[in-house]
Length: 102
Image 1: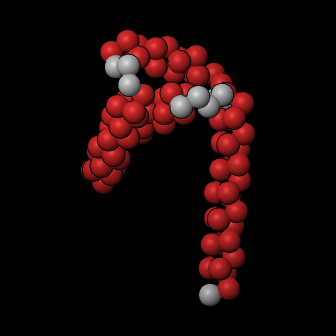
Image 2 (image 1 turned 135 degrees about the horizontal axis):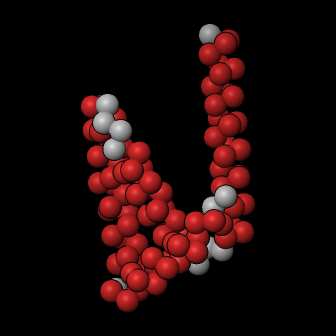
């Protein structure tokens, strides 16, 4: 799934490198931008404004930019994505079992 997006992400990172040669500065920008987007998402959802979805995709793009910028390969990202999804599922199932017991 993610591999479909990565060629576009690589193009964006190439443009970023033309503007800013320092990976650390680009990483910091992405991280700060994600923080701002998350607050905006929280606000938009609470207001029922569907623009939260576009802002969420901006966060996803920044995440993929960080992974690519720090030399993660598509295969590694896909593998890590699957591992993390499994972890989410396991946590949710544990919480569901705990709630059933209580």
